[in-house]
Length: 623
Image (cartoon, rainbow, N blue to C red):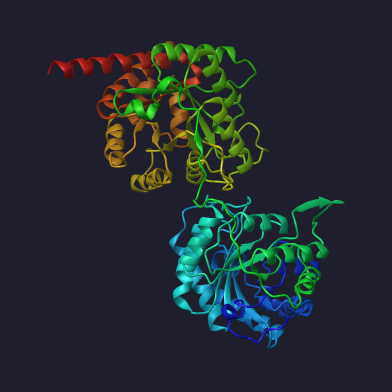
């Protein structure tokens, strides 16, 4: 198959075109180790890069992608080469052009900056990075730009928004999906393809992540805008472990058969992604030799972004959530830590005591201070099933990767546990198993946003779920900081991510309570102010000097120094009640932290909140 070097957009109107295969796969086969910048080889070993281009050209590829997939400022900064963006991109075009000769196109490759990482709100700096890379490629003389391996439609639309005004050259926009038919950020391919064409993409398609069969199925079940030109660059199947080595399974013969099937779906630009080699490209080129493109015929499926998803697991008997309750009345959450051994009876007895005292919800930490405790999920289920007590579970980012986090949340949904607090979690090395690994796949901002995605009936991977979750998501706030403005800015980001309510670290003086109120009254969601009674002078000193996020006033430290034993706990209760007198004036939400699992101390404070709230209510009604 040869080209007359018409404009790529025009050429694809009446021709099929074979693209190249995986650059990284071939470089690795030629001895380049994993873990280095493949793009930097354009500077240090251009002949090796050209060898790969030549092998694909000789195999029949007539569209060669520049070796610039990760040649953006963000990716290159990991190797200390962020200042070489323009140089690498320009040289990459020169290398590819020498291999393309006169009858092949050169497409400037621009990959996703997120590059498979957890999706965050797209940063403004991405705009500058896309512009910087695109300008370098365009000035070097590419025939078009290929935007590839974008898991999130919204990031790909941002790249198009930046690059389209820079050039009239053809733009190829390719998504990568984790599941057949839907992007990671929850858009159906039908919707995504429509938005990409509207945004100015000349050629739209799919690459990476999936093999030929699943990419074929994706096109078979998608509605494509009329007149859209389509591309497909599948992986060589799924990556698997064979004979002790990771490898892709799909053979060149299978790719030849798949190319014919993709042609039937109206695909005009066909190449390969991860695991594909010149042999795969040659097989496709031979199979499609002298064939003309086929018109796209959309399947007869209903349009629309998402199917109907049932809403189940509604809170039993219309029982209000803590967020609904706190809007109209004083609401008390009590933290009661799970046990560090295998006996749950004493813990459940304490929960019952707190419940009888009037606690609206009991919150269970998720291995706080990185110290191993009984699963809060299991204890929450026991509290709910045996005693009818509403659990509110902490979910730390530390202990579970994304697979485990979604599985955990799906389990909570099945158990009817829908009130959670998302926290970062203390580093493992400071806990009782310092050799354990901290995962931290996501930040608390990311996890809040992803939990809200489950509430929309969409999995972390973008797969539609048959039900919508009902999670009420809390976020933590530490007011015991030097720079309150920075802490508030961080809190506002959590609210923006979707937090429904806030729970603060404990405060130990009335002025701090007033300060928190003034600082947070604009955020628009309920705040539960944290109060934790002190138990001794040593306890006070420890919290003040050693526990992150806690700061005691000089008065509190001095008062605890004057008492010991039982008298110290009584003084701690007295001080907590004084703080509650102030807190009740400013907040409907009270968050009591039980020290050392002294449930009787917390129960006394819950009762005090109820009594004082009743007095305030009575006084206001008489006026």
